[in-house]
Length: 114
Ligand code: AMP
Ligand code: ZN
Image (tube, rainbow, N blue to C red; front, side):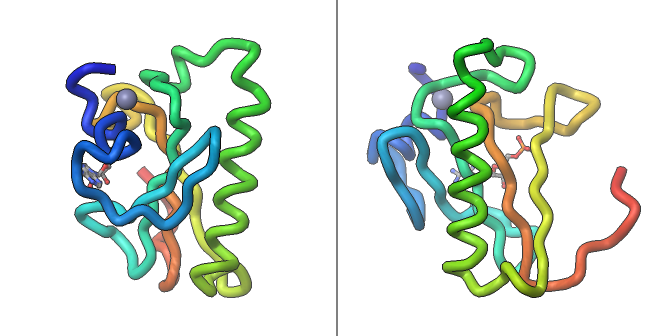
């Protein structure tokens, strides 16, 4: 989508530290990491948010979790643990309107959230 920063990173038109890419998804390091490991996993096709998902996206969303599992292992945080977050709209704190899964790990997360 024109003007979407994550679409530009996926297309290689904006800088990003890409750690994974396949036909359906791309993962890159968050610009302002909130944890020692902070990676964003995004579908290659533009989807605004969870609210914009369609039934046929179910496989794609499952794939984002598969990618998260692989990256967690690759980054050495699988055993210690990690947090996966998807923010949606204002109350969820979404700031970039290209659906993304935050993978956070490498230190103990605070609890509770919110
Ligand atoms: P959210 O608030 O859930 O929409 O998350 C958006 C995330 O994107 C934030 O953690 C930002 O730090 C991150 N971010 C914004 N711009 C970039 C960028 N150009 N490259 C990597 N991460 C970014
Ligand atoms: Zn986009």
